[in-house]
Length: 95
Image (cartoon, rainbow, N blue to C red; front, side):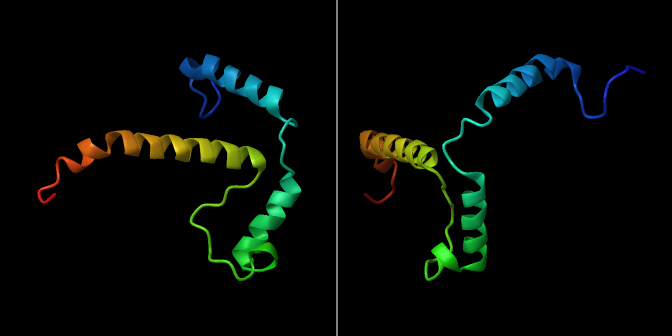
């Protein structure tokens, strides 16, 4: 029997090493404060504090980097919808 750790697939060793290096390089460089994020999550779950009186979110994006990335993706999706709207509607049975 090969001498490998449980759950470790040798074929993925290179990918795993790259992912671990990326985590080492970026860890601690986050713009957000994990403690603040945890407090917001608790407020949302308990529907109190910053979440009091707000509807429960389908998705919760925390941090300026998340806002930037999600906004960029949403604008790209909306642009794609606009560019292909005629094609999307063209397959409707009743226009």
